[in-house]
Length: 290
Figure 1 (cartoon, helix red, strand yellow):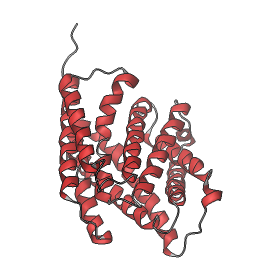
Figure 2 (cartoon, helix red, strand yellow):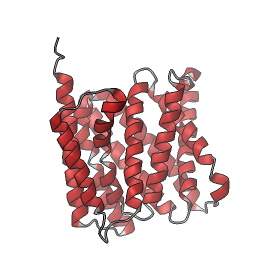
Figure 3 (cartoon, helix red, strand yellow):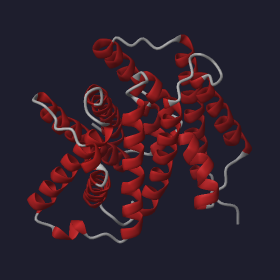
Figure 4 (cartoon, one colour):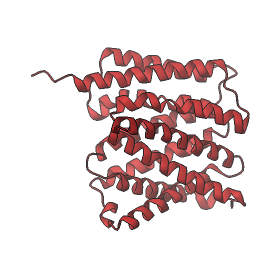
């Protein structure tokens, strides 16, 4: 199997694990405070990353060239997770996933002020159309709108800034290092409010917390490896396979059926995201003018 094809397979597999993560979280937050689920997710991730580092016997993996940025990455991802876990109490998995697909649009828009990148008119139009798709999903001002959708939008924004910061650290810090700091910062930040909202998990909930952390860690590791093996433009279309899994799992385990407007909005967001990725690929292939 070629590296490119391996990367695509890993990307699709990562989407399955992320779906399992969200589905498990949706089940847990029906009886546990979201903060407890968030802490469990990152505590397990931290434990797994420490086990990997100890197994490799390379303690240098806990050192980073960007300590402040790694802390910022961890806080952003933890915030995105906490907002998402709260949103899925009230929303269907398909709805949160469709809104979350706006992350590439946010990345494109924010890369201008944060990274100083140039974005052409066609990509700006695609970004605008993509955000119109988000509005189609949310339908503010109608009876279908739910305030939790604003949490999903904010979670997407946090996820986008997390991706931008990851670009900064990815050049020098290894994948194991980044996973370690995500777990460390996420668990530490989630632990702060934990004494005020703690509710002891019962029976199988302990196992589900462990499974959720395992699914998230495996998914992120697969995502990192996929980007090492194949260009982002080749992987991008397969990221959106998650909507299929979210719809299927939402129906099978929660009886949720997305309405037509959610599907239409999701299609608009996905199409716009793919256009943005294609534009970035063209920009990378175009040599700079002297």
